[in-house]
Length: 222
Picture 1 (cartoon, rainbow, N blue to C red):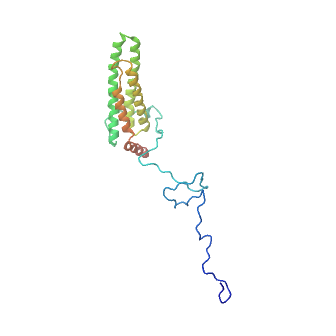
Picture 2: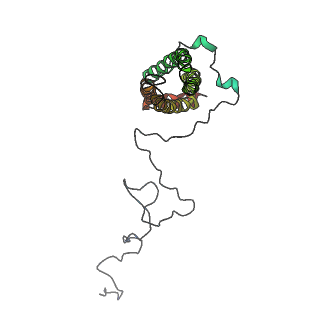
Picture 3: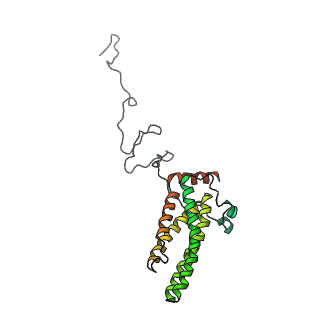
């Protein structure tokens, strides 16, 4: 319509393209800071260069497994600090690791003691079957090496060494293998099923969330 001066007027204000809401185009993504909860980008979307990608959140109560990076560089690093004097000190450890440590330590000591009885059994079997005695002797020597390693590794685990924790887990797997081999050698000779069950329980305690948090805290203090 025209006003008295002859100029055109509109009954409604003209809208500009910037004022009108635009539909979301396929492959677009809300700007950073306004991403709604649970938003997932469309398939095939790739953020432009310099655009911050959405962070991936870790599920509560889980932790990613990583190979230990604190392995020993020499023989001295593999030996317990302070020698045998600190064997009975468990200060600062969470309850789970205290129980696990004592299980590994006492189990290793009993394993060393048990190998002497194994040697006596080997001598007794040698008079009957030298071949069987040789097999038993090999198993006894392997068990002795594992028992000594178990004592040393348990003390290194107590120091917060993650490589020692992983090595003790492998020892638990080897004790399962020895239990299978020992059960086929003779009745009660070399049979270590009880030892395996004890080692398995100690292994589980080392990997519980509270133990994992302690190892991570010790790693952060280094």
